[in-house]
Image 1 (tube, rainbow, N blue to C red):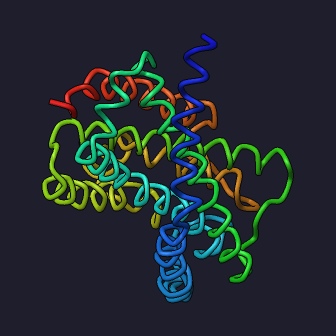
Image 2 (cartoon, helix red, strand yellow; image 1 turned 180 degrees about the horizontal axis):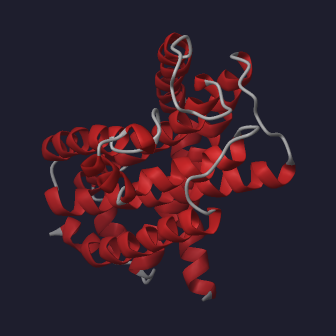
Length: 256
């Protein structure tokens, strides 16, 4: 267990060092949530009749945009893995005695830390737009846990895709193909009640829905969750463990 944890920490440390040397990626990723909240959210908040309960539309939308930011940045995490394969880094990692699970989990933990930094940016934008944020330590802890787990889940999914397709061109195409259906087939920007039955069924199978639901119930004053909080975290954790198992099995294929 000690060796496993040390290997996981070493991989996480390497990923964070890369981010510290080039923080421009975080800044570029911050542009999209700013546009969604400042433009899309401001416009649609003027519409009446949106069934968002006691919440204004901007309040309702803010947790969804936080989840979207996590999804969009994490789903392209695998492109870095392909670069590492081309540079020979993956080959060097695979010849070390580090467990394969630790190599994958370390990257997921690093993605979770990146997700927390992005969440800080979204919080700043939300405060500037006068979104009614909950500042209780318990609520913020749950939000941080959801962001961390969601980022780890989607980054592991990205790594799994990278292990299968193996080329940057194919990965970019598949990544773009997956992000928009995952986003729009969720409750990020509109309630489940507005969806037709077939789309609501898809949303119930979409892990992003459970991330948004957990964030909305804890991030916003008066926010309601469609699912129980433990159920949302349970689904995300189950999906993450399933993806972690698959990515661990496929990770050595990158070197072939």
